[in-house]
Length: 66
Image: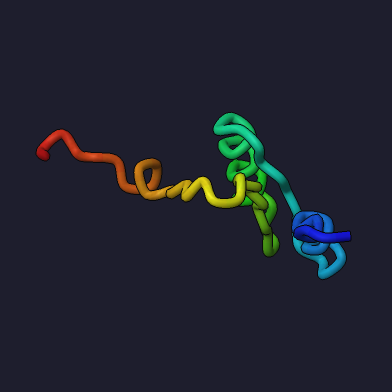
């Protein structure tokens, strides 16, 4: 079988909380659960190969001053 493993399931085998987020709404919910879990957590966000998706526009939105 080629491809990536199920990273969320793999995290669970090591005692971490493993979550998968496929949409922005999924990601919001997964991050809420991860921060509230009180234990190591991994949020797997699958992306299409070669799309070049970057999280920076979401992590560092432009401020009103720019």
